[in-house]
Amino acid sequence: MRSATPFWNAAGADLFERMKPAAPSGVELTQAYPPSRSPLTMSHNLTLQAIRPITHNVHELTFERPQGYDFTPGQATDFALDRDGWREEKRPFTFTSLPDADQLQFTIKSYPSHDGVTEQIGMMQAGDGVIIEDPWGAIEDKGPGTIIAGGAGLTPMLSILRARQASHGDLDGYRLIFSNSREKDIILREELERMPGLALDLLLSKEDTEGTHHGKVDADYLDKAGLDFSETFYLCGPPAMEEDVQTLLTARGVSEDRLVREH
Image 1: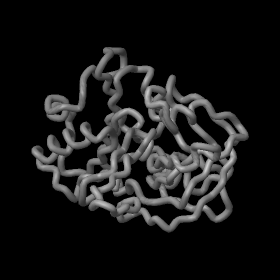
Image 2 (image 1 turned 45 degrees about the vertical axis):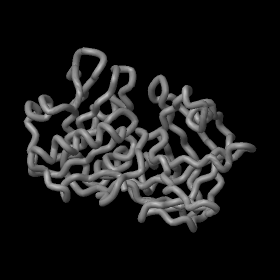
Image 3 (image 1 turned 30 degrees about the vertical axis):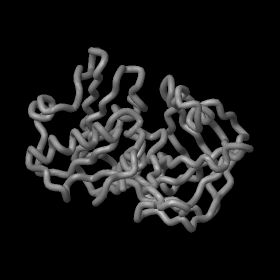
């Protein structure tokens, strides 16, 4: 759980926007890192083995796992394209594969309007190279509770849910409230619906379709959703959504130590 202003989770695509304080005149500041990240990390060159579309603008990328490269569910890494002009354009992405799998997987949303890294990622082909650094902590599994995710903000929780299912056989006690704009934006809906024990609520803000709730995660929804406000809540999504939902949960008695966000 973070104790200070968070680095932005841009919903699985650009997980965190790095922040620099203003420098005194004539002074160049080095990159600021959160406590869970060290500027002294190893780089690893990976070759893309496979890429497949998950939704109209989200892709799953699979790479061979470097020997000795370990991570825990919920962790992320700095990721750059291994090509001229892009190696310094690092973006943080969360691992979505199981921690003991032979491959590393990332589930990444492309933002063509940004004309940047995620647009290039969406056009990658098998054989293309990337550079990643050592993993660092993003969000931790604190046990059963309610996950409130917005869009590709689900990605930090994918590895956690998959690992919990693999180790325990089910996801009893976990509830996922997953908010998106339209049905076509729902990431891995079929997999989520098949996860044993996971209570799944799908919200759509711009459509009203069968099997979903039309609306947003607002005060009215929280009051009618039958939530237990004494349990743990995970928040992962756009920063404005996280802040709004945290304010609503706090007003309903959820203490700070039971709110889990990226750090």
